[in-house]
Amino acid sequence: MTIKNRQSKSKKKQKNRSPLTSLSHLHFCTVRSIICREKKQNPNRTTSLISREREREMVSKSALCALIVVLFCSSPVHGGDIVHQDDKAPKRPGCDNDFVLVKVPIYIEGNEVNEFVGVGARFGPTLESKEKHANQTRLALADPPHCCSAPKNKLTGEVILVHRGNCSFTAKANVAEAAGASAILIINNRAELFKMVCEANETDVVIGIPAVMLPQDAGISLEESLNNKSTVSVQLYSPKRPSVDVAEVFLWLMAVGTILCASYWSAWSAREAAIEQDKLLKDASEDFSMETTGSSNVVNISTTSAILFVLIASCFLFMLYKLMSFWFIEVLVVLFAIGGAEGLQTCLVALLSRWFERAADTFVKVPLLGAVSYLTLAVSPFCIAFAVVWAVFRRVSIAWIGQDILGIALIITVLQIIRVPNLKVGTVLLSCAFLYDIFWVFVSKWWFKESVMIVVARGDKSGEDGIPMLLKIPRMFDPWGGYSIIGFGDIILPGLLIAFSLRYDWLSKKNLRAGYFLWAMIAYGLGLLITYVALNLMDGHGQPALLYIVPFTLGMWKDPWHIFDFGKKERGSQESVDERRTAKTMSA
Image (cartoon, rainbow, N blue to C red):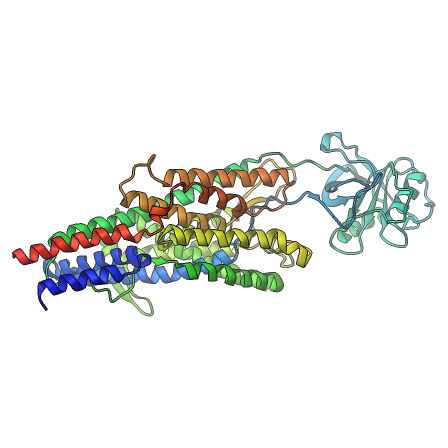
């Protein structure tokens, strides 16, 4: 074949190549160029380069599997509910309280021994919000225990402890108030709490003492203490959640910082590949071929896969909801530990390879794994041990630190390897995720009587604190404790588009102010900030973060049409480089 014909064939292939594969093609051509050059200059190093590329491809496949797992478990930003609304029990005069959680510290012989959590009734006066204003009052056991008739024991301002059943909640409260009780504690006949409402046909609902329901185990414990002739006292108060907790500030910084680091790593890799190819093609020889016969370590998402992903994610989330149990959470913990160890290893190897180049470039064959660098072998035991220690001790109070480290490493690795090739795919992916989040947080309540996404995120019916695919920080100044959390999907999905914007800016030679990345980061930060504002306005009810993040992130692309096809710039640049290479060959 003549040089002219080869040039024509090369250009034809460039024109036929889909823009979705241009960035992957650019990286692969760079690797092929390096290997061709090394065959001439240093034959012994060629094997190392091939081994490194295979090792990266292996990480790519692992990261793709990890992406599927962690994004299926995307969850809303959540702070824990302390105020509960109930449309089935509408408010009416005398029966118009919100259902609030109530703290009940227990004192035996003057010493605080325990603290239970109950729920306030729809009726009665509201409770104090501060512990120092709540009176410590002696507890008395009702006789008869259901308190549907006047108690036999005389009350002088004590809090009365009664059983649920035989009459309505308001009837019990009226009897207790008439007997001289200052408050009534009702023991539920189940382990969970129950919302106490007024019956539709009841008229005497103006009650002057507070009513609180306790779970069954708390009631049994109090009854045992009273039957042992111990002096038992209680306090009743319902502290309010602070408007803003420091945990939310740190969680915001973690989410924004993770996307920032992952975006710069992704853009740096893309720019390094582009520069390397441009240098090598200037003096490329006949040994170099533009044909691609292998795979890249970058996985590009297509429009079809973006749509299918959200559909499959919905099916997986529904399966989690139906099969939620202790063993299922254990499976997710194992999957997360594997993905987290892989992500931590990838990040550490990339970071340490700057100082330990020889260890990163020297490979050894490992059974079942193939060629692995000495640096990877050195780092892997630490990463595996870190993940195992977290999995074993994940119920310890400080285990959230290990979970966040593994989670951030996994997110950064996924954003480095999984990429959207253009704005069209990014828009489709975020739009589908936007609808996915709204449906499973809000719309699912109409069908399943509860928010499927929030139930899965909390790990209800599993005996665990929630699924592990979350970044979480304990609420530091919240009297109710708990965690502020954000799902991996709320970081990875917008992060894919933000990382794309930085790659585009760098390859288009746009500065920070003229490019899209700065505004994409600002838009994401504002969207997440609005999410936390909504979270606090809704009294801690879980919010779908993508409901606020997606409009901000997509809305900042004020003139997007010229970058819907990111590959055109790449192909044009590649054709000009190919022409220079051909001209040099002809002159030789």
